[in-house]
Length: 270
Length: 278
Image (cartoon, rainbow over all chains, first blue to last red):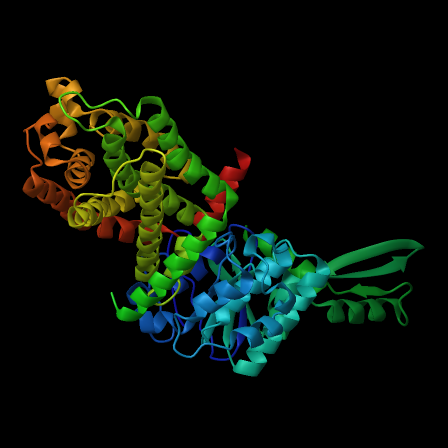
């Protein structure tokens, strides 16, 4: 999958492998939704090349659409319909859909099967949206900010569901989030999008290395605390040991967490 | 449009219809606006014969209201429903499914036909029970005028529905011209009571012609004398209604395509945010 767009997106280049969970991470306004909508074929790009499952989304046929699952940010549709009925209706559009009852079970909505969609809680509604997104056995699933507004428990359950589905059925998942912890927990690989550009892309470890903010080295000298910020704390510590000719009093080396590194990167870029 | 989309669409339309008739608000709205209104009119002026004929006002109004049911469903209910479906994301959901948009349109049309059928039956029943009107004189004409009248307004209604930013605006903007047209189209009051210029305007729109066709089906031939040309002009009825239908069919698909192409998740979210602020 490759694309590059202008204006909101300024030359985004990345490839997503089949079967992987890939997150687009970035602050609000970074262009995550624009990117995902271009990929879904809901929005036309002004320039660049995009291939989704080998097809340009702007020329996507029904056969291509049948291989995609889409979960957008804010659905309020079909509020009158019962949960199971809506899922069965959407399943009809596909040649080889999942069994509706099994899928309801998998997303934990068996108890709500006959409840009206409009009466579901936020978390239940989101799980239904995912069920609707995958009922056609897609090869590729798009999730746009799937856990926005979730409490921690619902979020954790949701992560388990996505991981389970991806592992069981080999679905490729592309999801956007502004929550670093979510990207870290779910994704095989993550691209950090800042102001329409990919700042960093890679596995969580690669990401941590690439975005590493400077570490802080602190010690006591003449009873007073001293500190320096450095990208090479090991070198600084060695120099301190030389200077003190032995152990350094109150030596502290503090490496930033991934979150601090991420915030540093976002701040630096914007 | 493939057969699968049509099949799913018809089922979809039927499901939507069953929700509508189970919704107390919709049901009461329908009953009050058609049966209640009509029954009150019958009790008020029902026995008065239309000037120059031996037709009672009830019979005349039966034809008029049937015309208005189709007209209102096509040019009022349908655009509002489309605008609502756009706003809450229904249209976008369907757009993300293979064959979703054709199925959606078939579904909307099916729901509308069910609605028109239910209301027509209610009106005929009210006319028979409360007004003592006899069964239609010419069933064949009744059916073809109702069907052609639907064909005349549905594509147009879909096109109108695509042009409004939100459902509230659609309802607010549409209600006045619809009422105005109802007043001048001879639906409730024979056009012979109206000034020449108003009659000329009324004859441009499908509502007049549909009313005329329905009167031809329900009223005795002698009543034709009270019409503008002194006859039922059925060929013209068919011609004008078909012309409106064809014009609508030419405009509507490209409008619908344009609107659905413009829809995206972020626009949906923006609109919902804006709506929440107001």
